[in-house]
Length: 168
Length: 168
DNA sequence: ACAAATCCTACTCTCTTGGTAGGAATATGT
DNA sequence: ACATATTCCTACCAAGAGAGTAGGATTTGT
Image (cartoon, rainbow over all chains, first blue to last red; front, side, top):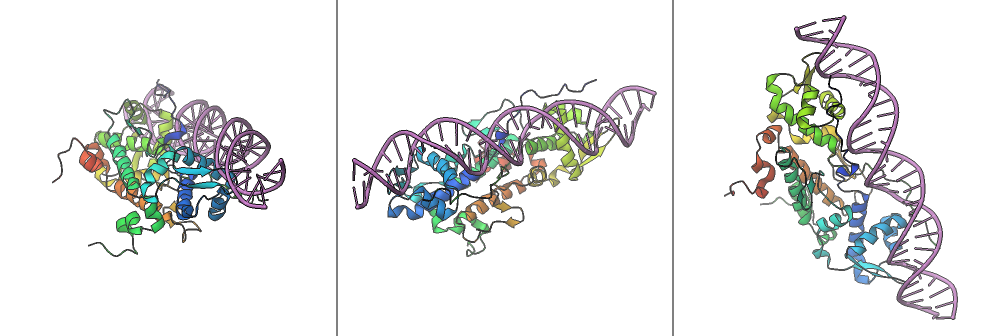
């Protein structure tokens, strides 16, 4: 009488695969906003929150990540704020999301630094996940902040862009 | 003195973007297992759980989804079990994951049935998410269950497949 | 009848997400 | 010097989903 023989001991935790949460999405929004405004000097948190209509306090925690990750320059005190550390074209979307999300792998059997699973050698679905991961990675590495502020739909939507003239 | 003026009322819930959780991953594993064994007739849950070393009870809930979604045929009682309803080549990975995960969109501002966000018209990051969604969708629709059981690395890994002979 | 299966409903537990609160440190204009 | 505007930092909290369990009812083959 086998009932719970197959019970699994190690419980996989929820961090299975969050791909892009509000954190990453807001982070990107912030970066875009800063890319547009950085020329005029430092931009304050309240300014960004107002433009994007997001909670200041929550945004603060997200900007902190970006800032610590070296994506921004900051200045305290009156007239202080944040600005991009580099040129918009030198940020890939991949690195922005990677910083805020931790990982973008579609499943937790794929880590940034390769594969981490003891069944990897015999796992027949692994190539699928690896392939998916590559496809995502590749796409996000190919788009920069500049592409977004320029509204480069062709690059972002590719063949799916209906407003773009057809490629030859 | 503005402090919480920018507070956001509607709180976005965690369902932001789960991409592929254990549910979807196990579901795929089950489908692969069945694809391999279905020729011999119905395969029992305990058989699958044993082969794949997963909890029977949890697997049960996942198979229920697959079954209700019309992906499987089932037979109760002794010698009963499950088998694929169709030929392995007639299942795309996309539909399997869609059934179990609900959505595969990388962000919750993209829904299956198009876009659902009031800021969509002015949102500069939307094309990015839409493009990412398309890329993922496209990839997963291009792979079938058969590809997995055949170990078609070339199709799954594409240019990233190191063991494949280089494409001309 | 009995055993081996699927089916069904409900429950639990833990972690992450999505925030909030309050204050300390710092820079600027007057 | 001082008030003010800003970043920085450390906690804290509520809700919900993910991951899995429990227990039984029903069905079928022998």
